[in-house]
Length: 458
View 1 (cartoon, rainbow, N blue to C red):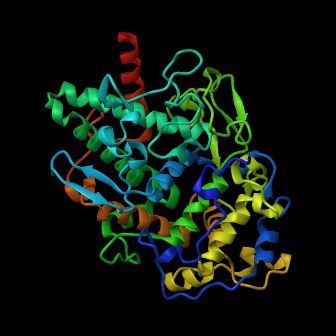
View 2: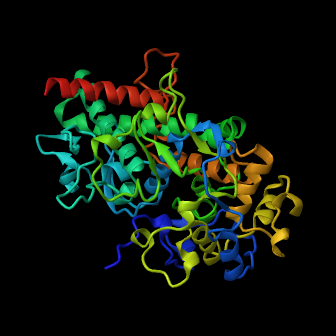
View 3: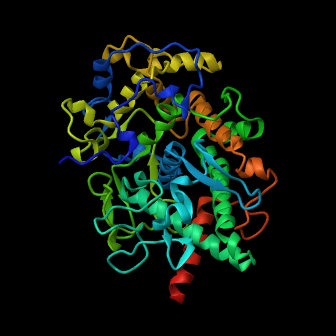
């Protein structure tokens, strides 16, 4: 029996009317659909085509964005697109409601909470997450059942070993936050909700103040944070624009390296070495110094530049990830990205650029005419080329950056329980002094030190 795909980004079975469902919508509903044939897309994205880059050559590195931010971006994608019908509450506002809104609220982490998903939590201390133990007896894996299946709020976060460990990092951060609110004297009945709020708000802060400037550039990130979205308009309910979910935010696929250094002694291929759905051995435990700037003596490995290129392993995905496919090109993640855009009737990149009033790439810049391409450019491919041409692959260009910034800021601003809405003057608490900013590095140190203290007491 062929294994089912482990991640929605690999799902080839698309609904052409996806944008009409409650969770999805269109950011540019008046723009015409790019008319392009499937064979042309397959030729563009298949293994061996120009998009195929077989190695992690130093020229492909983007030291401006350490490799760990690719994992944060992957986690964000899953959290926004999770299918939900859950209950949520806020420690201060005392709000409890059913919801389906695609907010960045870490439901991929929390599921439906200790009452609705008790298997995610420690039976001896239900305010805390249950952590898994590896073959060395250390709590350095996500919890798993006896068949190795991860017990997570979103099972897609076990699609590969680094993402699973990033999820684990956030589990540990929550547990550290529980200890913190208890030390501050919170009532026992309020401990979980206060810790959950703190975790959500601190992660939202990282996304808007650290991740977003890296991905779209500091100037655009600051503008959208201060002025709000200028082109994204929600109706009575928020939605995820398909221009974001199925084009712009898929820039992260180009950032994925073929090989990752996990720690001082272990380097592994993204596929098949880090393929998910299995326990993480002690030898493969991630040392986050190799993914984020945590130690002046250790230079973290870089993400790849944002460009219309992809690691070869992603263009030849195994059946265990995508299932059997009669068409060989369906094993290519690039082909799947391109086909999603066609199935969802996305506009061309040039059409979006003209609508936004930003410079439109020329055919010489796009460089598809050398392959006999006679159409305008698929939005996903255009955004990658735009980043390469206008920003040297270091961050997204004006089309991709605008879409990503407006969606991330817009969804956080629309959420009544986000820090931007519930407490606009809030600033992070888990810092050494008021002048410090809270970053992913701060989060890692806070979670690591607290977890080390917990283990030493056990």
